[in-house]
Length: 314
Image (cartoon, helix red, strand yellow):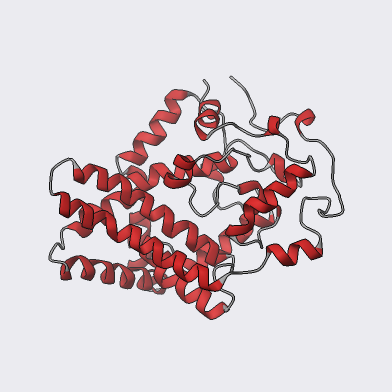
């Protein structure tokens, strides 16, 4: 079994800087200004579209009304939390709306709190992740570390996720935060948002679906999706000033973009090269990195499944 997921030196050509890109791959000022524009009106449609997709799942399950619709809906609702999470991540970078107050209100109340994410704490931790991937303050090191692993270990991790073990740990932590008077204010807005979601199911005449199609997917199918995406981004990589040694590069296909990496988050190396570029322009930066010869075909995994096989090769 391989002992590292870091690309060998011969796959990391030293082709930068160029006229358009700096030493680390960041765009030069003219290109950077172009790539950093935030399309506010389009993002209003994006957020509304995300919620339309989320609402469509329980509506569709109820309309179909047969037993097999429910497990499919639970899986699809796991994807719904991916939609909320990735757009919440965009807001945490203050890239969703140009007006900071609007950006943070939407990020908190329409994206993060419905997905059980404490927005401001997440932002602080995520900025630490970008400052020094795999460094001492890396908030998600437990997700990324110690790869590659054996297939048996990989199966156990995904099984725990699928059966709700990982989700229950997260929920217990949130309940403890809510029970502690000193930290209760962190949990209050999350539970307020959950009350609104529950009320929506209740008004529709199906309050039980809050448990079946909100809590259950958050604890199960979303956990599987989140782990698979996270390890595909950084699993087995190392602390380095060269982002090609901290972040995997994977060719993007429609199925993966639908299920796991919506809103261009699969162009993850580009995001780490310049985390101030909105999601719509990440493919353009990736193309610039390829055109400069800094990202080559041999550096890229052909698919997510190919990378997962390598991450669990033992």
